[in-house]
Figure: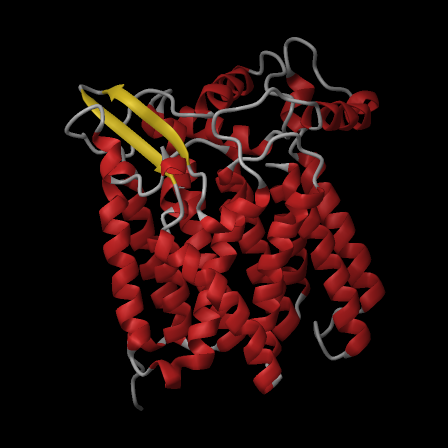
Length: 410
């Protein structure tokens, strides 16, 4: 019997990609040793959760802060402990991106291209090394999408309920995941109406009801620790009113911020955010939350290319990914937030990497090997920015000028 190379089997490749990503994210995870950016909000909230003392950071749901607290419990109240589960979330994003493309296309080269772009796109690397909620939210959404596509192709209540639970847990990290859960439900009904053979073994009524119940249950289960606070514990009577209080806090008018930006500027990399730029651990260090410019800008071309691929061939896969990216950006035009920040684009930047992989897959014959040169160029740009993605020691206080190509990046 002929043996199949490990490099031609998706599961071993996915495991190797996961190990590579996790190793990359863990290196020097404890630097800087001081809280960075919004860690100043979430670390005290995680400590309050760990002690079951009192409500803290009630603007957001609890799951992301619970995961930070579990890291502290396992590894101590240290930078490594704060950020460990964020590295797992980043790895889940990369592996889920690989899985989504593998399910959609069944070609390892396309799946590997997407995973490589996720690792080289800068945003996943930065968010995988900071204790913020967005990384957890994105990991659950991407895992949910992968399970959703598996249920679409192969059926099975396990994958379907797993997808629903992931979307519910994503909302349990940040409410911005709620539109993605709604989109998943709406697309399910539309696809089943168009062709009942999709989602084999899952009826449209039972499937929709189970999805809604599983997602809702997963979301509300994340509030369980709040019922055991020593002070101001949550009660069943207060559970729903507490949601209204969260909404009030999230929609309040906030004062202007140095790094605020409009949603339509995010795809252009116009206003990234310095998560850190100050002396720390004996040296000047910086962490810039920025998308790899080559990936982000070429991704906009890829969105158009995927649309044209559908016009040309009728293939709905590239169009679906392109529309998914459009949806991920468009929701920010509707969400009632008084301020916007570049890191809100995180999930969109992830989807954009999959869009590029889909465009390359469709146009590979015409690219004639240039896709490999493109990935190499993305790697060069990633390495160029690496010192200010990973908080390397910098030569001087004004060293940032080496990487700030535009005034708006300062």
